[in-house]
Image (tube, rainbow, N blue to C red; front, side):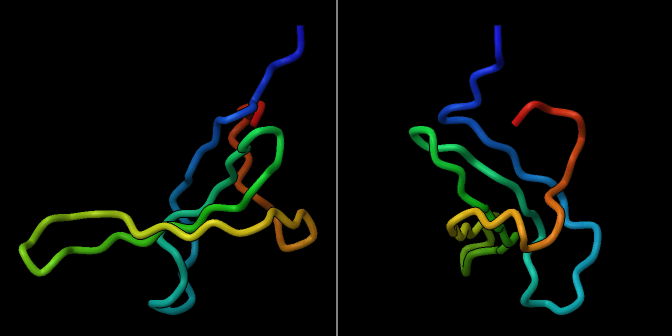
Length: 73
């Protein structure tokens, strides 16, 4: 039986951040059978609460290697 990664994803800590604008975390998510790239930045609100700011974009396998930790998604 093949693993179904539909509607699942993962974020990984970025190994290198060349500038402050680069994301703290990157990964991939599958939504209804379509893959998307995820980027996340750690932030602190004016009230001092920690949160993640996310960006979703179309997945392009030619844009560098995604993190590979052996997970099937």
